[in-house]
Image (cartoon, rainbow, N blue to C red; front, top):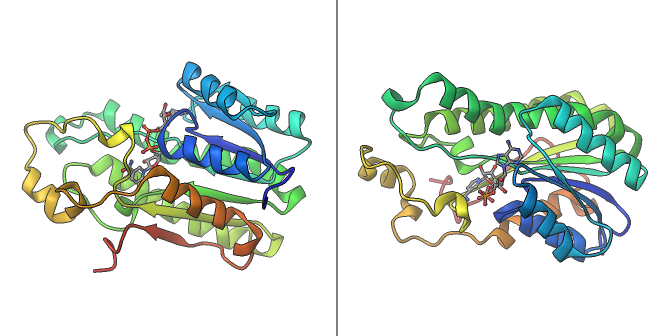
Length: 248
Ligand SMILES: NC(=O)c1ccc[n+]([C@@H]2O[C@H](COP(=O)([O-])OP(=O)(O)OC[C@H]3O[C@@H](n4cnc5c(N)ncnc54)[C@H](O)[C@@H]3O)[C@@H](O)[C@H]2O)c1
């Protein structure tokens, strides 16, 4: 029960890693506000968790939507202890097909969303000496072909994590991110575009070729560790959970 009574926001909580993370925190006594663009999905997640979990529609790329979520968490639970930025989208495709609207959306959700939520949550985290856990990716540490906007955004999340960890280090706020390899969630269940050289992708991401993916619970365990007091001396890290993919 490491999070007994703690006020925690989880974005992307309707599915996959965000949902597993919400379950993990709920099981350890947290008071949750769950946000997701999938309004029905996040409402179902909160119902399943029971207790006083609150679900809210959220677009992390929209500042007002982020603000409403943070305000709701603070009003409902008397403050904020942990922010988990997990919402994200994947957009495989050739550079030639990656028009500016696709580029902009991938950066807006995966990178600007982390900035917006962090900036709006920070005044409240300063009061509790809380912390932030961001969901980057192995693609935040190494390149993946035909995935340039996503890779750029996730490298950005790693950089943002490190910069903010240093900026707030004297104020007792920790900011970390996690870099998972493939995780069995709906995000990677779809078929990739036919016009990309999949052999090149395999070289960069061998787990896609029959390797062993993580389960969402493996990542949720790492989120909970970094958010907990056990990690009180850990800040500014990009923590791989990748079976060694990025160690080579
Ligand atoms: N699955 C993987 O292989 C993998 C690997 C590394 C990193 N990640 C990262 O983990 C995070 C979670 O991904 P997942 O695998 O659980 O995928 P998922 O598709 O199962 O879940 C992502 C959730 O984010 C929500 N979302 C998307 N855009 C949103 C927005 N604008 N505002 C609010 N919510 C939004 C979706 O509705 C969904 O519920 C993402 O940031 C992803 O990039 C996933």
